[in-house]
Image (cartoon, rainbow over all chains, first blue to last red; front, side, top):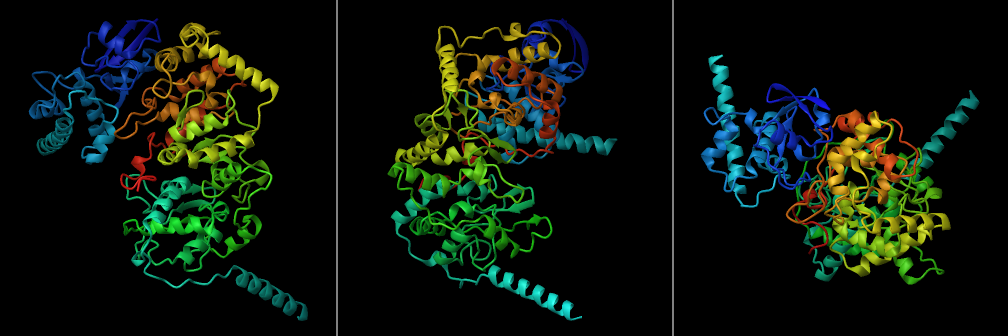
Length: 163
Length: 457
């Protein structure tokens, strides 16, 4: 079945079983490999992407439910040459060890910061509670998210100043 | 003229008589926390407070334990739970034991004001003086917390509290608990705990138009914070009938392999009960099971068939996933969502609580009201803090109202013999928007109150 998807602002058509999880479509059809397969059960968060600005586990999201909605993966936020604030912050703080969970962490954090640019510590922990890290870089991940909030704030101020 | 005078006199007399009837004296303030309390008594009180689930209503999630302020939505308006820490200004730090005993026994505060029955004194009236003394000792040895709370917003004329004396006249049967000589000591103990401090019926019994429990439909199912509190009497919808052992296990652990995981407000109840001993919980289970009675032959046969199916060879493996769909259209859409979003856990062959429950066993799928499965589908089961627990992602962000309706219609058709649910999409919409308010808690009660949780003392 042909399904039309809007991924990172590009409209693309994929021909697949409607029950296929979004994660498989992203990785196997669209070659967007940031979202990772972790548990495959919607419990670890490594497959997190955004759908209409909200964090979603792509491994338990049937692709058929996404027609007419905006999917954003980590690739849609920034590139190596022009990283988004959340990516800059994670690099600055060196928040990754093995890095497998980090794209999901960044997407959950991005969804939080878009809604709430200055989250409290508790709000950050709540938003990230469904993202697991096995290496133990939790404290740096939290620091990176706080830093990303600052970067976004100063970017917005700059824009307001020049605009 | 004379008739008017007589009528006026009668009205004045009636109002006067009611005022006299409703009036309660103030009990002198004391410095309650300055008293010495026996540590054994405090420890006993901690257990009793856990049994009574006091913390759940008297704590805003994340705030200090027992500091109150939680808004309890009722059909008559929002009532805010008071601070029951021993703070002198904003808590109950000036309450003597006599004042506490009176509040539990007849629902009147220290100043003599009638309390709203959101505080379930229709149950607590059965609690013995000795148990109240222990609860008092426990509460008065908590750290005082100073708070400012919003006032209550009840509909006119219920802001006038003496009216509550009339409610009590109709619906409050003052205690203490009277054991039934025809029941065993264990069943009497269970009845005392379940009907008294445990106040199971406050959620699990239906209420009448004046907000009182319908005594003729005891345990026939009620409502709590946006969730259906299922019938726990003879009318239970559990596909496999509950027995004493299953109830005891569920109350202690928060889940049972043939019934699933406690969620919503029940998650807090079992979170509190987890720290109690078997001797405390077993009598409650025995009592509730005795009220459920033995299932009739038909229900028993159906349960045996189901159990054989489930434990048979290869039975837990998916019987079809998306292939099981018939009829196309909405059915097909529901089946595809089920295959991709649900089956991996719910047909994964991993036992609860870490694997999903086989929906054939689910009370939520088999009950006539789909509210609870709507709540869980939208909001999931949030993980417990710092410990292993059942967990399920919510699907509010990935599935729209129509998609959830299709999914649930498919699940209902495939996994129960019940008739199709009506108006699911609209219920999903109302639940998602908050028009129908639902409280969603983690699988433990720690989030409710990061300090001082449960019976640990």
